[in-house]
Image 1 (tube, rainbow, N blue to C red):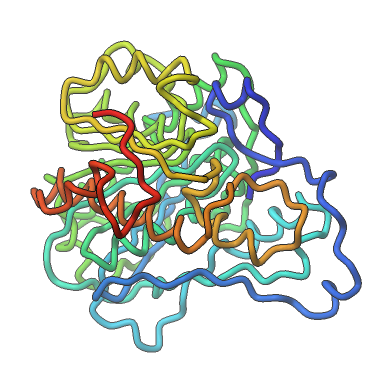
Image 2: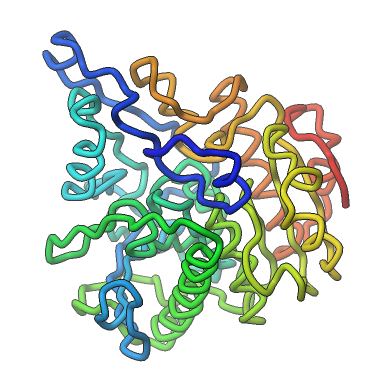
Length: 390
């Protein structure tokens, strides 16, 4: 969960992470008496969901923050064939959860973070699926869009969520090490962080290619789920992200032609891709608060330089975090947490974002034109999605 109240400057720079814990009221004795379990809605598609966590080490790159070989954590979430008797992955692993709660000075101690609906290492369902890469917002974690990720997977996608150590929020490694965000400030630092993210995403794609060829990219050589090798179609790859992760999705498309379509959920564009543009499909989504094509200096230039299919949509009555799990968790948390979720009802935000992201990738990676009405802002089922340009 974010921990800094953003300024206008941070909105423009794309560093929409973190809210000052000191602004949050401390828990009452009633809160401390019994833990309240937070919940996330399950996916609506026909396929059960499986997942496996990977620790990936890129020996060809030096981490600019640690000086060590760059390593990161990723979760491959995929349609499963049998999830019986499989434990569900937590929303955050224990060390990352402790770090998140510590940042809030105790206000979250009375709450149990939600489980996911992803069965750990369940056998993969037969069939090759389009692969989507997901990058989270600054100082946020790869699990912060579990609602959208599991929905996509339940309808037949493989989604690989990526944590970017020192730029993501709380990244826990298999040895128990927890790396916290350095929270890049200033245009140069943010541009450097996005460049690292783009390199991370390319390395994840390379690691998935190793997996498809029968190798084990996990640094600990941990067992992979049965059938996963045959579940990934790396000829149909997309990328999407929230906030700074949306900038990373565009940046990796600029660098890597393997990524055929991309989406940015309310993030400022960063880096050379603004001027170079893209020749492949790209979706922008924003809020009235952001109003990217009018108020964010990076969006109009990027928009003009998009040479492929393009669309700009808006989520009505939304805040910056209405695109993430925080919109669903906010009503379950104590009042006073300065989360940017707007006035849109949580269930409507979740349904609309799930449907829009799925419709875009269905159209661009699966060639399903029947989804186009939603992408034109003309769906009576999802009136919250408005057409801005395209």
